[in-house]
Length: 141
Image 1: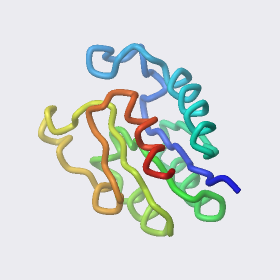
Image 2 (image 1 turned 180 degrees about the vertical axis):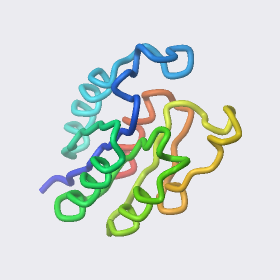
Image 3 (image 1 turned 60 degrees about the vertical axis):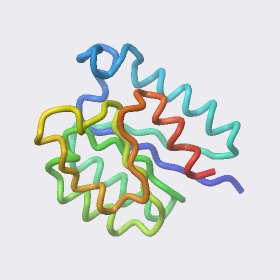
C-alpha cells in the first residue's frame, strides 16, 4: 500500500505565478500540483493537494490528515510566522511533517525568519523554488 502525503498550502499561494514572480517564479500552483502528482507516482506515493487562504481550513485539513495521512508537506506561507493554531494542529499529528518555503525566508525581511512550524517539522526546505515540493516528497520515500 502506498503512503498518502498531504500537501498543504497557505494564503496567497493560489496566486503563485502571478504574485511577485521575481521571488516565487512563474509556475502556477496547478503546475506544481501536476508535477507533484507525477513525481509521487514514480515514488509510489499518493498525495492530497490543498490550498486555502483561511487558517481554519488548514487546521481542519491537518485534523483530517490525522486519520488518513502518513505525512504532511506544508507551505504555511504567511501563517508560518503567526499561527499557533497551525502549530497546535501539527503537534496533534503523529507522523512526519516537512515545512516548505519556495523562497529563502532567511534572506528576506526579519519577521520572516521566525517560524512556529519549524520546531515541529522533521525537515525544513527553503529557497529551492517550486522544485522544493518534489524534493520534499523524497523525504517520504
